[in-house]
Image (cartoon, rainbow, N blue to C red):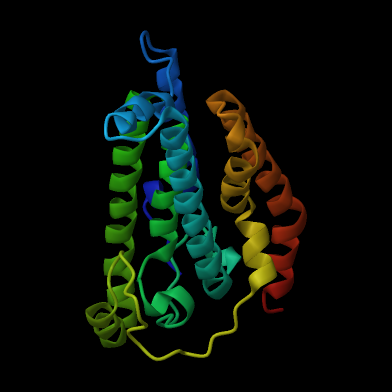
Length: 242
């Protein structure tokens, strides 16, 4: 375990601030329309009806955020919610199981895919800012972690990097499993927010109301804080060696 740079230690807060800034673009003049509403006429120009264009964008948001939630939950089940949420960097061994057999950074990829759903209900300028800012921040976090893991784990990690893609997952596993045991309940509870967002889009998105979905996102975030405090944290404490 190593004390990490400040931006890594406070990465959850920074993510939250970047998303907040993206939504805050609504406060600027002439940016009161959602990206959803702005993109719909563009899809109409290629032959889709207004309804078809609206549904296409909604389904895309549900699918991308759903994949993002799945990747994060899958990765957290093997990595452990305590490590996912830790402010410090950990590197006791090379994790070669679950999604880590296909991608070295499934959590960061999941977060970026999740951002596309939020971008749909932001203003266009907010969406562009957030996608770029979150993307660059994910890259920054990866470049903070990789030198630490290489120095800590040595050649086994370097060999792992040669075989497994950094971000975009391979269709088939690149390495044999390490037989790690996933902790699914802890992962699901830890990723309550990520799981809740695609569910909200799937349930309430058919009302085509970006403001309603924004409120749902805020509620999901609030619920996740409560779940982590009441359920995830006690589970993590119980999992610690005595």
